[in-house]
Image (cartoon, rainbow, N blue to C red; front, side, top):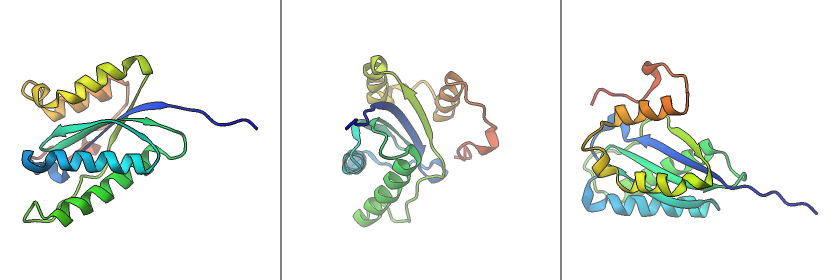
Length: 153
């Protein structure tokens, strides 16, 4: 009996609703650990989860048993409930609609891991908007800026 084998490396990027700076340092690490747990519970391989106060980067080794959009939906739903349950914020927390998903070969994993690891440093030089549009351009993804994240904040 033949089996199905795959390992697809995907970087997933999504933002806090309205790109508000709500992921505060005292508890941000706990959210990222929780997101890693969600990914593991979906039988996928979390390689790194990191970000800054207004957005998250995830590098995941995916099997073909779930789609990227299903995984992102589950990450957002479950992590939103976790943040609300922990009551770290006085107001309701939400992730913004949409996400970016970018594929990499196994030889790029170390580079992308370090890129995600060093998000705080990276964002001292580049805004999230610049970073995200650069990713879209690198991957030759056509887009209309009105359908990207809400950049009003």
